[in-house]
Image (cartoon, rainbow, N blue to C red; front, side, top):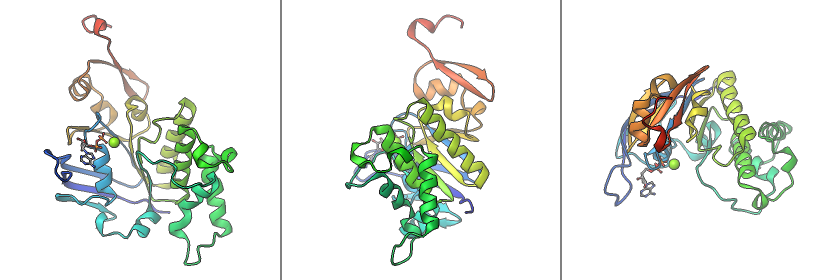
Length: 268
Ligand code: ADP
Ligand code: MG
């Protein structure tokens, strides 16, 4: 499955009746085999940018394109064949078993009759295995812990065999092992299968070690974008998150440590 390229050209958006733009003039390209980390404080416009990318909102100005075509022009089915999405919030809606929930990821690919082929079943099993939910296959989704449900949702997105992954805080409720496994998996998929990926996360230090580029949002605008080294600087992090930090080089990516009040004026 070939990767999908995403582009945002001068995207501006304001929610109905809102006093300010949620997003202002944001441009961003994501190519095949590229993983981008989208970071920034609460309310800085990350989810809004993803919704525009996905064609769920229509920009006031600018264009969001996927494979060169405006995302708002794609049919939902067509889009679901190419883009796997894990939205920020989703409660288990129907009484479904885990395996059925993951199988939903195949639906955009099924014909009129909706019958699963052996290949479809194989893809579902592989996705469940990759997200470590095979042992949960017969559980009702309503009985899962937050982290388990999150992994099921990621498995469902992988079952789509998408060309791109759009993930909004996918590891927010995961423990360390499962968070690392998700990040390793996503970065492997992007690099080995040439998928494109965009991942929103507050775990910036971790993301810095997996992504090609970080995009730092601030009050609806893109404040900085580039390599983790270019974005994780004391000046930028302190300005955007309004909290002092120390930045330390660590192997492949810089890591920052938020400072306690009493640590601010002493040299580390
Ligand atoms: P983030 O994902 O970075 O936390 P969002 O993109 O969700 O930020 O929100 C950006 C801004 O848009 C915030 O000020 C938020 O309150 C506002 N916003 C988000 N969703 C809506 C909505 N449905 N209606 C009105 N305002 C919204
Ligand atoms: Mg959000």
